[in-house]
Image (cartoon, rainbow, N blue to C red):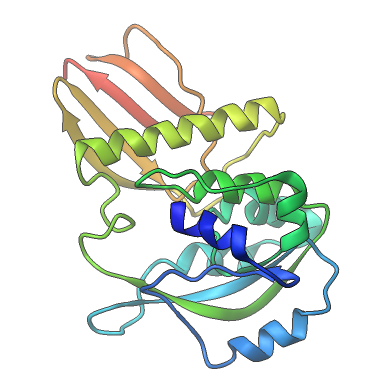
Length: 239
């Protein structure tokens, strides 16, 4: 988050584009950027590819985009919500610099998920956007990375939950209601932290509502997050 904020302070020109150090632009990227350089939209969203960094074989991180772009039309409103709230990464986009500066958007300076709030805020505030179905870049996947390991250390797990809780508060304040988009739910993992157990479901447009309930089946739930009737994160003890 800190490095990206430094970049924001020194950026010039019409567009902002983010690229992580382990990802790379595709050969057609410059032509795509040139194609949309005159756009008046606040954000231009692009498709992506993903590959494993050690073998360069196709990976999984592009699948949610492939599914969304193939199954939903902009007229239905579901693609609109996916782009605004399901495209939770800052890469794969051209973002108008004046739009970001107008709203004062910055990245959270946390070790994990520091780009999630930024992506939700820019997606929510965008008055206009475009979608290009051609892939702009390739995202690489490697074992042990913060993206591949949804839990990692206890500290990273709790930091990620704090980010999600903050995003939910932003949604609540902005009156954002998200509905489950078919095909994006999968269980990421299970972890015990002290006497507490955490089960995190990812690949949803995260709409978390943290609550406290006294009992749930045979164990006590300390906190939970949900997308309407679909639990996304559960923190419980006594199993």
